[in-house]
Length: 179
Image 1: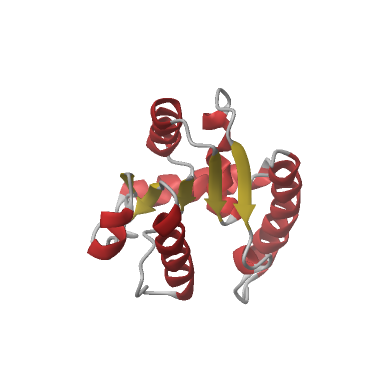
Image 2: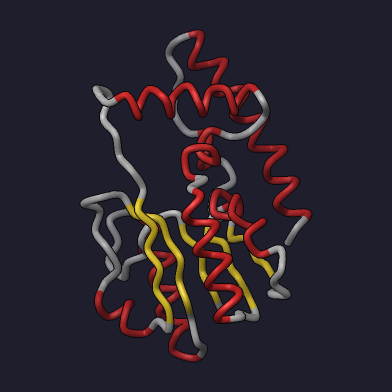
């Protein structure tokens, strides 16, 4: 089984999602061969050693973390807003890292998993990398409203949130049609 996660899973996670996914992978690896492809910010806690030791393959993919003073931050902000106007959810744009799709495709071709489990719908943005794979695809959607949390305070933020909610509904329908 190949797991795809938008963050490093951990047995003692820095947030609930990391813990849930880490413990699920740990338990699954007791009985099955398991591989993991996941995204990670610089400085973010990585996998627990105990979890890493159970996995057949581990592929972290670096995410960049630019601060507001960097040009990259503002380029990304313009990019996700333009994509949002085109109907693509903000987080999908922010986490759609080309290297992730490439690595996921490589792991699927070389390791040939029977099942690929995408943790959270956001990870399923990389599903096209499995076009040549015959693996069964699953999406774990722990909280259907997770992507739309937050209280917008300005008119622009309210507009962005409404567009993002609409984009998420469409994205979910497309993802669920492919699993």
